[in-house]
Length: 114
Length: 109
Image 1 (cartoon, each protein chain N blue to C red):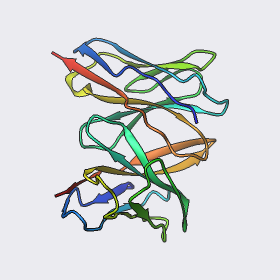
Image 2 (image 1 turned 120 degrees about the vertical axis):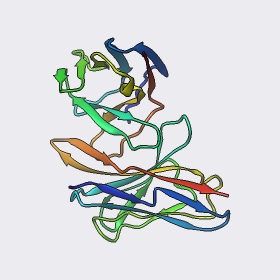
Image 3 (image 1 turned 90 degrees about the vertical axis):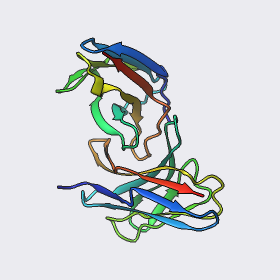
Image 4 (image 1 turned 180 degrees about the horizontal axis):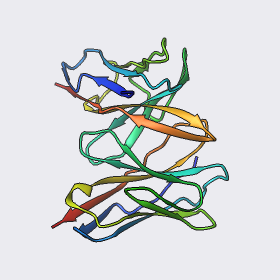
């Protein structure tokens, strides 16, 4: 079955360490996205990539970095510069048809920094 | 970028019909309206999408008036498992989806 895989589901890191969250899709979607969600809040856009080797900052990109070397993969690195990294991270991919972007979301990674 | 406004929360009982209204005053001509459902610690799940008038699928209906400045998601005969957060989004071609806080629907028995 096609879909988006985020791993791991739970991740614990010590403060000051960089950590990379994995996102892989086999839907042949061109665009991929990273969102962050805090308790009781909506999703906030971190980074997005519409094609391989290209990506744009979202609303809260500071302290994060991404790469898009392959169409299927869009890893997110949470750096030590991110002041409050503990959150639920969601990856998504999308494809355009007739002007509409159809989105598929992964199941998320919950990151806890102690 | 169009923004949406929807109620923060709604309460209902099992078996009732629930209507959640969303306003999107700045919607552009080529925008679609999409609703997502999210359960705790899960990714959002697509519910329904429309451009104008009425759209119906196996789980919901979407009503869009002629001016398209608002839309209403209708959930028939809700059950406890429909307790979730519902997001209304307007799709802008070429840009990422921007989520608001959504509407938290609580269904009681």
